[in-house]
Image 1 (cartoon, one colour):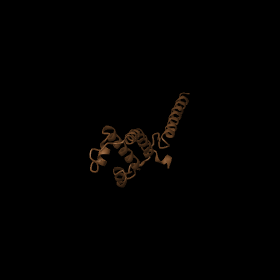
Image 2 (image 1 turned 135 degrees about the vertical axis):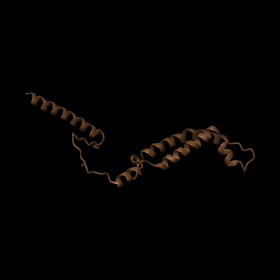
Image 3 (image 1 turned 60 degrees about the vertical axis):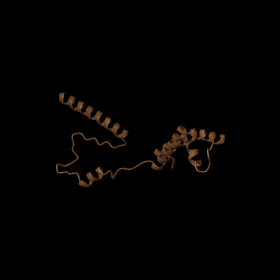
Image 4 (image 1 turned 60 degrees about the horizontal axis):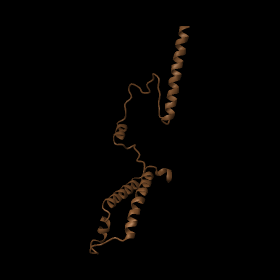
Length: 137
C-alpha cells in the first residue's frame, strides 16, 4: 500500500514536470531540452575548440534588419532637428555665395514648416521598415 502511494506520487510529479516542460518547449519554440536525471554527455566528452572559437567570434550570429533604412531615418531626423532649431541655416547655406542678404519666400517657409511634420513621419516609417523589412518585402 505504501509503495503504491509512492509510485503514484512519483508518477504525478513526473507528469506535472513533463507538462510544464512541454508548455515551456512550446513557448520557446521547441528549443527546450528537458532531462530527468540523465546526462547526455559521456565523462570523456570535450567541447571542440572550433565551437568555442565560433561562439567567441559571433560567426553564427545573423544580422537582421536593414541598416540602410535606419541610417537614412537618423539622417532625416538630424537634418529636421537642425532645420527646426535654425530655420534659415540651410537657406543661407545654399545662397551665401550667390546673393547678398538673402530672404526666403513665403512658399519656402510654408514648405519648410510642412516638412517639419512630414519628414519625421517618413523617418519613423523607415525605422519600422528597418526592423521589420522581411514582413514588407
